[in-house]
Image (cartoon, rainbow, N blue to C red; front, side, top):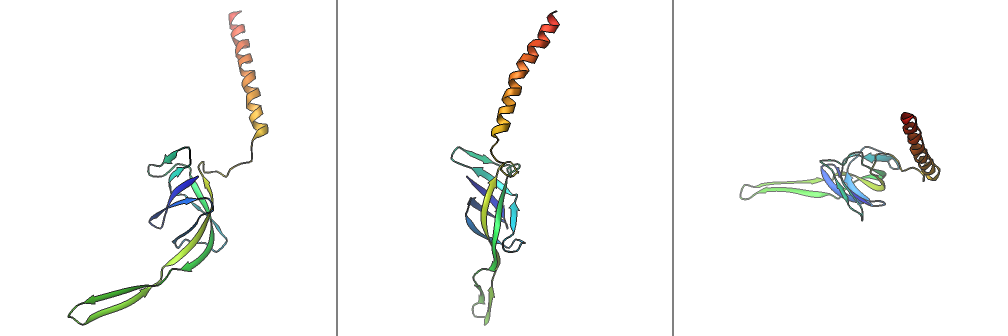
Length: 139
């Protein structure tokens, strides 16, 4: 399963256990964060595209580290004017590891083997009750 999320003004295609580098998000290393801006969720069966977001979908991630990106050089020059300015810049970044992609907005529950049998029994009782009510109206 994969998802396309939006954070920091950019979009990222992520899957479980992916490591991504995004613009700084508040949180210390080891913290779990929830990314709610999910634009698309897909798997081998098909895709769900949001308009603009997929309803009740979210991606949970763990913050691996808060760091700074490589330095970039900003150099301005106007020729023949003796104008030159040199600056450097390092962007604050957050390294995330995707832990889970949720489509319903809730944490995945344990298998429901016992609960699946109960609705089948209830469904079997409903037609019998319906027959009893129709039998009473005919009398």
